Length: 125
Figure 1 (cartoon, rainbow, N blue to C red):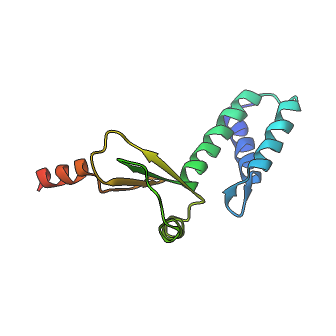
Figure 2 (figure 1 turned 120 degrees about the vertical axis):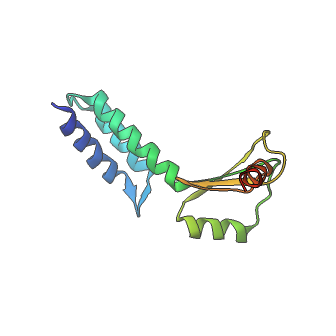
């Protein structure tokens, strides 16, 4: 089977993995179990394509908030971020490289209000 057909199979499996536009873990588990038991030729290529699509979707579903120290988010902040980004999850990380400020990443959108970003902005002006 050629690579285009395998990619199409993976795309169809990916579409079956979604519920309300979000990745459904139980559906992914079922698809992987079924694929593991099948004798489908090109199974490794299908899995590679499928994994890539799932990873891209999960990246879009998760907002990453990085800060210099531990953040205790408020419910209002979380609701605002999730509604504006249409994401499903928020992941909080402490970044020891930051001196001050925070960086919010949602898919390919980045809001950087760290001290380093502000200094770079000033030096470019």
